[in-house]
Image (cartoon, rainbow, N blue to C red; front, side, top):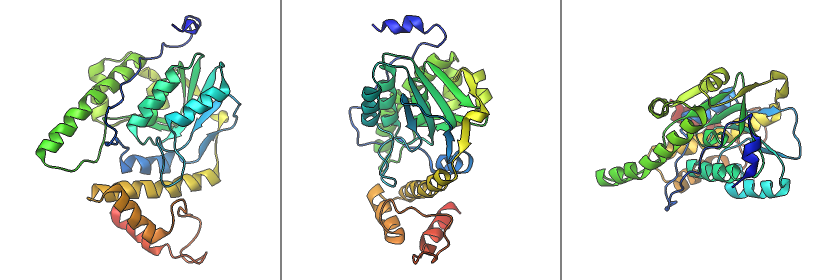
Length: 294
């Protein structure tokens, strides 16, 4: 039993732990459209201040092939050990990613023996919204968003395979409903409808509905233009990979095709550079992006 909970009279109790799948050959992902919205509305937003007890989550949830980074339970566990038995601040601006890795991160954070303050700056979408629910206190920017939806996967097979996948996903959707409901106090049926509709909540809506507790002051946030450019360029590759997979390719096939056009992983497009300006031809990649979005 964690006695520190008795001291957190100002904060809501953390919801319970969430189940993780016994099989990890299925990834619950973020839709390409969500990556696009994050690029447009939230890329590059950061906090002005950062202490030595802060964990930042400014990228995709799960290991990220294109950036070489990503937010994982293993990394967060390591950061928590370094911080020690102190209050923790988690700064989130993420389009989401692997929902099951998000659950693992959530479970790690909720076991921390001191108060956890989550600050949503920009966006906490999909898997990142699950992580946000581990906060004893959740603060969100007025122009920021929290997005919830059902598990979204890419699956291939006949009707029996599809039925099996649906049955596999159902308990995880139910577990998310329970966590969101426990945190917000909202009726589970209302939560389920919002998830069905893939709902984006503004800062004020998230507070009104109980998903967050207070607004972040605008003067505590800034837009890092360098980070914004990098976020957007890598994000194009993430979204493109998912679009190619939606068209029937495996993830490895999609990555191979993109790499043949653009070069090596991590060499993301620089939107400030025109094709040929640095000796490289990005026209094929730009054309592929335009084709996939049309």
